[in-house]
Length: 218
Image (cartoon, rainbow, N blue to C red; front, side, top):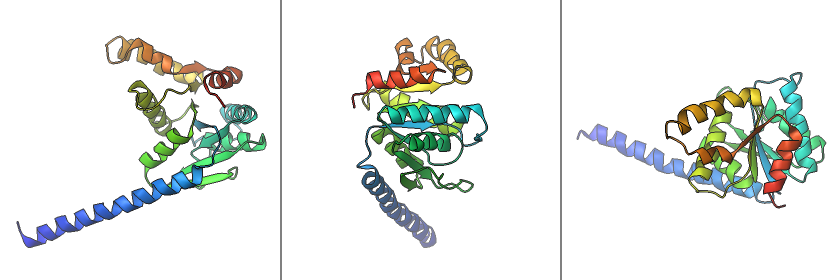
């Protein structure tokens, strides 16, 4: 092998080795920052929703009810439905937490946070959502929301974590996806029928909070 090529391989190997320290640093920082967080619910949803939209107001109300029920609320810490989740929780007297991700076009933290933690690596951020949440609520959202939701479903399905409540808020939004689960995944044998019991779909905030309270001991 030419010496120049060998140097390149060695250089890349060294860079990858040093990256491990950055990863470890983020994990330690996340654990230290979130160690004293109380019982929490992770709320996910689109960043592309304004305060004037009904789904923003619903997310705000939902998070307020979670706070009144004794839960902290964890979001991605950004705008849109993340902001609504933090705002509703904070204004209801709850502990509002934001787990921010550094992205080229990403916005900054929203203003309704009591606890803040920033990450460069998505997989570490997802670890923190899972580790410090006792339930998930998925509001309508894009790829990021789907990513967080599918991660939790897989971990529960494969028994890598203890089962916890997962609520999909918005029957019009989530209903077609659940129908696809039934018609393709279950029908074609890619998923067991019982796996559809890992979550509920609702439009009712009281039902959502009640479902979480029934399955979580504070």
